[in-house]
Image (cartoon, rainbow, N blue to C red; front, top):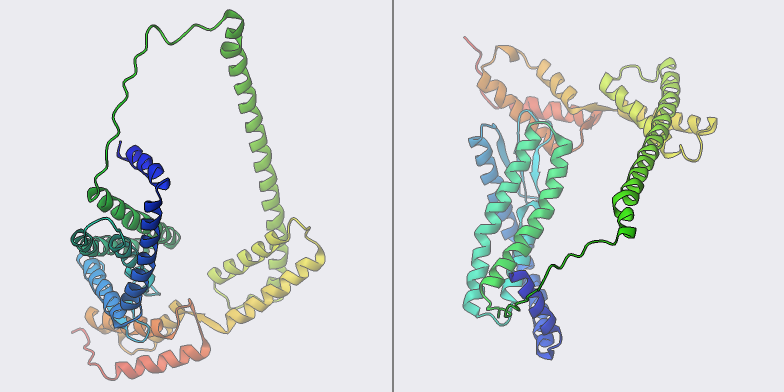
Length: 380
């Protein structure tokens, strides 16, 4: 009922010139207040404090939930990082995760709502603070729990989905709820309608056949046609996949016979094969020729040579641990401390899953220098 009343009131306001002036004033105030609030909260030191608050609180909640972690704040980039020992990459809380944008949009809309008293607008803006904080913390913690459980593809989807839901539900939903509660809508009087007799009339006998026999039969034919088209489409897709896979195997075996894949882990070899498949899929519609296969093989060789100049973070971490004397004889607390130091320095060096040989050597020097400054006790 309220939504219908809102639409009727909106149509009526369109025809009123005074409402045009109110709309222009709202737009001007919204742009002005948003610009000021965004500069204050997003471009000053406050942005760092807000990001620190969300990072620290999220880290504490994750600890309560049983997920051991270390909270680190990067004062240079004003971003919070949550280091979890089971993850090779830190959970980074950037500017977009801080809720500053949503908060500025919400308070700008509330404070720009002319026609509502200043007191109610100020109270509405203050109410926006706990609402944005609570929902943003829920969003960060929920996404972090999914990342820790190892489902990264689903975590990326949830992260993007929750961002849009947060933007729509919190900003638009909260503003709509506040606006309707602080404005008086005049309800339109109900119009009573009366009907006499039976409104349903029986179909003529000559038209009954159309609805009882012909239309159901046409629906069955259409359904059967759709099923046949679907099967044909899937057959074409499967044929294309199998053909691409055969070409990919041929290129992969050529690389294997030339010992190009020597020294690579099974995981990296699988990634090389997927790279070849993706390149073949891109040129499938144009036709896979011998020249194109040779070009893709050269691109795969370039990728392999680039990979060989790099090492996975997990491999580098294992190499460092293997060089630490008496590592297995250390207490669990000291082993966890060493892992935290390694993960922290890995996060500082790069956010990519691989390290160059130079970065790997630099990391080892940094780790062993740090270990000389702490006391490690062996188990008795």
